[in-house]
Image (tube, rainbow, N blue to C red; front, side, top):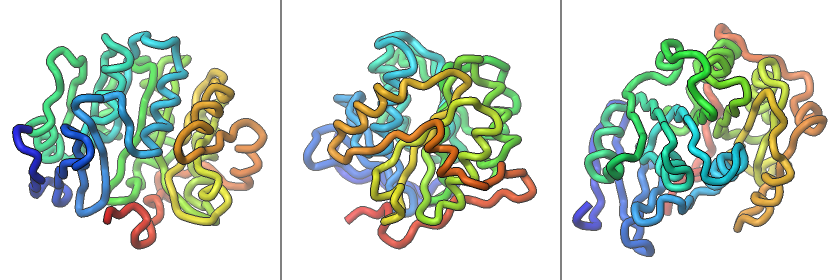
Length: 281
């Protein structure tokens, strides 16, 4: 963008707004209907402002040796923060971004254009519909960061959806999701049960205060058929400005408890955040 002034646009699913960060010259915050969606610094795409994005970045950093190109599918586009991160940290990666709100994609690509040769392909489509037509074994990593407003849509929470995502992943691929919940964690537990019905390895990353039920917050979940490098993840997340815990194995099974996988007929969106949970000043 040539001038650091806010830009608003009515899109398919709400009102999107790009606002400049006064502290970073070419950094921008994307909100939709007032809810923060993405933060991106065009001069430093490896900079991740949101805590949950940094945690997703930590997993991306540990799924393969540093700098190795990956094939990544992103469900949910926002300001293309994580696709830009992968392109910067793993040059030569091939990435697909699936965003249901075509207006958001148009706003972001017009005002915050991708660099030439980024290797990022954009698709205006429903995430689950796109996955149904995607080829088998397409991706090393699949990241689900889809929110309708401030809630994960119900059709992206089910066993059938996870099985479709697993088909698109390579046998050693990693599924990542950004979820949000609070005590008593009915939604999060059901998602852990759903992922555990498909993948052998499931881990979660969250701030201790969230896991203790003290507040509503984001939880990053990782799942795969191969062991995850939870020791490296724990070191990285503990060093963040807002340290997080990594739980896996027996701890995840205890947390999941008696929760059952979610069938399409029983699916509900993630819970509505309390007022101010993800707001901006």
